Length: 189
Image (cartoon, rainbow, N blue to C red):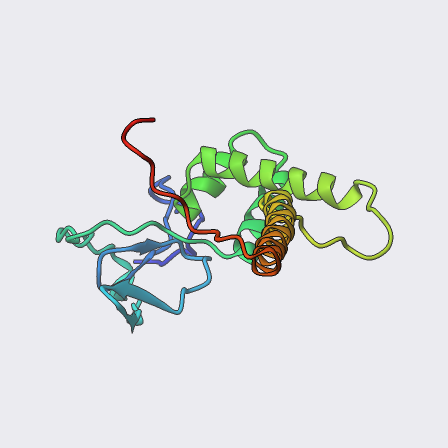
């Protein structure tokens, strides 16, 4: 039996040959062109993703029926996203984008999201930039803090005045010989 390249149409069978996809030990499917992630998180540790070999003999192997205990989100690198968007933009024939997405195991919504992200970054990069030093971000509580500090200074000033007045009253009472102790009230008043 003749073997065909992945992504090509077999001449005898008129079937598209799909390239093998990598699967990590936890059942995460990684598209054939995606750059590998350093490891798969499990609990608090990171374990390196095992190397997966392509099926031998040109046949297809059945997908792993074991479902992982906890689903993991696929993560794509910026280079991979950029490559896929460029390839999709370069597609001119009808159905070429669909075959690209099938080959990579992606959804069309991902491609649309990646294109929007690219366009937003381009707009942000082309927007006029403010020149000069960047200003420090203003703390939202800075105004309130300044107001409280002003009030504190005012109250301390008033307290100092009150203490001075009390000291003055004590000195005057000593000079005049007047007692500052409150008089007891008579019950007749």
